[in-house]
Image (cartoon, rainbow, N blue to C red; front, side, top):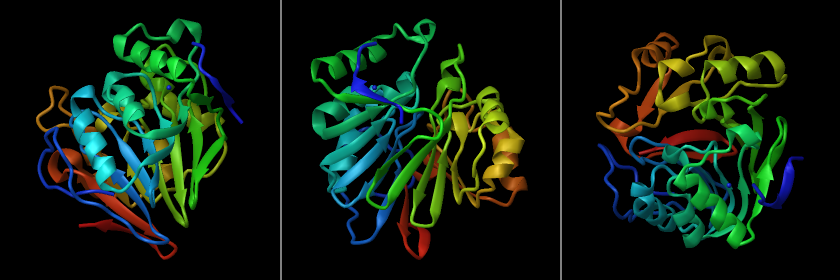
Length: 284
């Protein structure tokens, strides 16, 4: 199991169209149901796995979306986050994390263990670490193969398999298992990390839903890795008319050529899946 210490050195409305920071007003509740929410936080990433009043949050998007994100989680009836996973320390993934810490009871913060040379000097990262230290939050640095769970949900970590100077390639790669359904979330992992994981980490990659890497960037289309995932559904989290041109045509072509259903937060808003013992379905 990865190191668990106090740090020294980190279901809701379905809207169409781009989400603006604001308030969410709907909720998802149900017995023996787990909801997976890919939350529209513009040009960023955030996913909530909800089981009753508890959840696991993976990333938070930029700070500009904090009010919306907190409102969204509240409207789901979630008041406790067993784990808050910071996939990697870029602001479009952890910008709102301190506001999440302040708003909810948090069990453990999960983040990649960075080398001394990789530790960012950005204010958003420093704010996160200061809050964790000041409030004595538990932190886990998972190793490849480690697992965390909540009720009927288990998350295994497939990467990163090695240190990289590129923080995108330090992204925690999460494979979520809910009953028989599997969801793969790649963070901002690019070809370098995906290649390293695919070549060195043995295990099962097959998943039903793939949240594509780096907001649908061409730099994250590693065909051998994605072929092993062999998902039926692709999700891309990106902002409308973003300056990066995400999603790139290489990612869209891969999805199309492999017959995958595609949902995008810039077009579909918040994207929600219901998982039960019978399987998964998208909530409209």
